[in-house]
Image 1: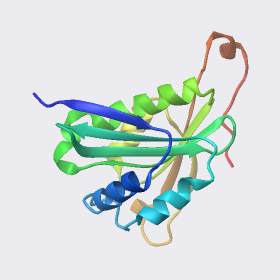
Image 2 (image 1 turned 30 degrees about the vertical axis):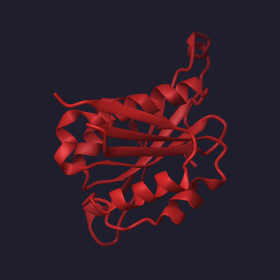
Image 3 (image 1 turned 90 degrees about the horizontal axis):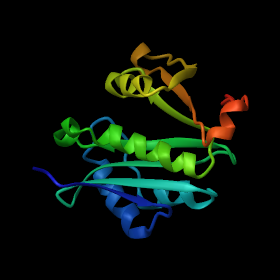
Length: 169
């Protein structure tokens, strides 16, 4: 039986950025390399960020990075699981962990962008309550259309009575 751990970080260190930069090269869908400096720069000025690392037998098998767009809106920026570990439910587990953390931080909306060609990701998001909020068509190929999805979060019982909605930027 595999030992699965989800590690939660709220700051990105240079060492973790280096580890993620190397890891990203092993993900076929992430077709552009990101340097440690690019990762650090992306998160440098964010008020709140979350980095989840999925470890299988103490080896990095996946990650999920997100940050605040506003006080109430959290953006799930980048995430992936290596192909050999995709059967373990790591992406769904990290999605649930990210949502729980966002609720604790009083976010009321999570948004994510993906491409039409990544059907397993789209299906997972829709099955977990995300709704299509916007579409950026590609001039090259319909599979390259970028899809933005949002999910409303209810932080506590008193929030249920409020009409809190995700707003498309």
